[in-house]
Amino acid sequence: MADSRRYRVGYALLPKKQQSFIQDSLVSLCRDRGIDLVPIDLRRPLIDQGPFDCLLHKLYGDDWSRQLDDFRRYYPDATVIDSPESISRLHNRISMLQVRIHVVVSVVAARFGIPKQIVIYDKETLSDSRSWDLLKFPVIAKPLIADGSAKSHKMSLIFNHDGLDKLKPPIVLQEFVNHGGVIFKVYVVGDYVQCVKRKSLPDVIPGSISSESSMPFSQVSNITTPQRNNDDDDDDDMMQLDGTEMPPQSFVVDLARGLRSATKLHLFNFDVIRDSTRENKYLVIDINYFPGYAKMPGYERVLIDFLWDVVSERKRTTVDQMAVAAVTTTAAGGNRPAAAAVGVEENGVSPRQQVMLGCEDEAVRNIAVTNSGCSTSTDNCIDGEDQKEKSPILQV
Ligand SMILES: Nc1ncnc2c1ncn2[C@@H]1O[C@H](COP(=O)(O)OP(=O)(O)OP(=O)(O)O)[C@@H](O)[C@H]1O
Ligand SMILES: O=P(O)(O)O[C@H]1[C@H](OP(=O)(O)O)[C@@H](OP(=O)(O)O)[C@@H](O)[C@@H](O)[C@@H]1OP(=O)(O)O
Image 1 (tube, helix red, strand yellow):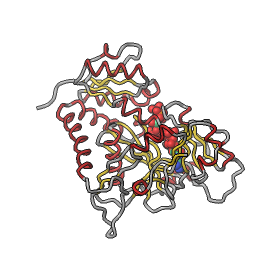
Image 2 (cartoon, rainbow, N blue to C red):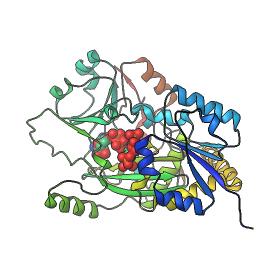
Image 3 (tube, helix red, strand yellow):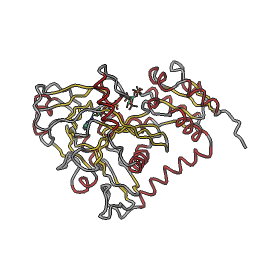
Image 4 (cartoon, rainbow, N blue to C red):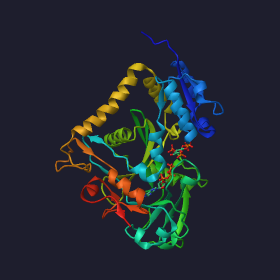
């Protein structure tokens, strides 16, 4: 029997986001499906604007969190996507990549990790070479806070020690990993996963002399198609993108599912690079909440299907059960080591494995009490195997 009920989905977004995400095509397709998208008036209390079957939001701050709490108390049946607690984990570039990923991998010929990185909280530590002498230059300096502000996207590629002088802690120093100038952006919308290729920073040629000690940059991978004025450069960029092989789809899906379970988020994307020096080694470098979905081909259909699943009671239960099942499955793999790399067995087929990316809880506590934390690894990245052998944090 057709469901003739209409559903109300409220959205609380900043004007820029609203403009890019709430397109006429999305609104009208939703309407045809029985879903009314309702803008939240940010000048009025949220609680006065309900009821909603579902609430989408990308706003931060204590006041907004309080409003959401009130809303959830008053409308316990409404689904809030996503919880501020889960989202806030992505606002710090250390906790962002410390999420444990419980990935159940079926058949995958790829491994993953995160780049080797340290966090520096003050100038004094920055000027002490012992803080960063475990890192190999070049490194990328990223603001520790990733709250979506223009400042949080301002990065620098640092070629040598002199380049560190201009930095303003708190910052994360992350080893730059050559990856062929192409990044993989994986968009996640509930169960749906789509991987696209984007232009990234070019490789740094070992031994090449740069006259500068650092190079600032911002939001390189947000450019969907080449947006420079020179046609030849555009053609080169397109050829480079076209010629880059995608990561195995099953690997991307498993990674996405693991991240979803670990972050408890439904709407996010993550950036992955393929290490040019190590075969089939992928590094997760960034996770973004509620990214620019309008840049994802066919985004309207994907979002509508997701919203429909959320608002219709049957699926709401299933989504919750799935999240529980994912955690239960990984917990049940008790004879696996706490941290293991996704790898290929000799016959080229991995068994179903539990893998984990990120630091142990102990490590999180260490970070809170030291000025810098460093993942120990002899290589340029941290993966499950490294963590199994060594403490993931080096106190400096
Ligand atoms: N460890 C790394 N090695 C090589 N390149 C990197 C590394 N980290 C970041 N990059 C490059 O720098 C860009 C920006 O990095 P990152 O994604 O961390 O910044 P961001 O401001 O959070 O990005 P976004 O705009 O997606 O939110 C990446 O898209 C990639 O091109
Ligand atoms: O708006 P855009 O399309 O540029 O989306 C970008 C989004 O900006 P917005 O949320 O202000 O819109 C960014 O969010 P903040 O980190 O700044 O919060 C971040 O998620 C980027 O990764 C998105 O780009 P994408 O990864 O999809 O290419």
